[in-house]
Length: 202
Image (cartoon, rainbow, N blue to C red):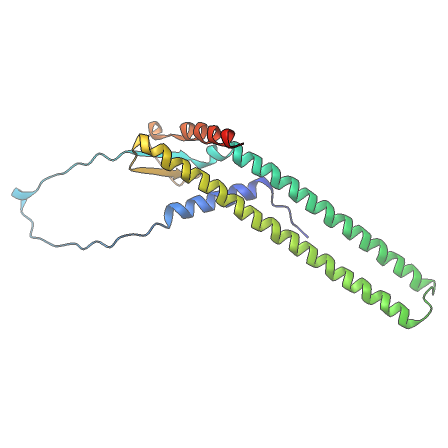
């Protein structure tokens, strides 16, 4: 009956959401015209593209909104675990009492013993349903929190980029970018802006 997902679960969910948003962009079709090669007509056109990147791992572990959501999730997971443990302990005691009554012939009839056994079977099923419900609720909340964090980052970056004018802002997750100029790292600027925005909303 494992329902604990924890801090790493939310981190993984956020990384998946951000990575998906970065990679699931629609691509436009391009038609290519083939022309004969003429060395005299070759020209080279250079375009200045402003590129920056955000280290998502470093961002999230210092983003106050993410940290608060993680703490809240841990409390809810712990409460769910304690509630489930308490109910399981109650059931265990009821089952042991039933076993003792069977051994001591306490029940007035076989029919009464069967009724109590049926009740315990239903009680066991209720515990299984409770475990599944709590797990499902926590999983849904993890996903919702991941979307909330992702939307907050995306919204901030749109405002941030109005002044900075980057053509591309990459999401660096782990080693998905093998080599990049450190001067393109805007993680601290984005982090400070996100935390400032979060403080103002709180």
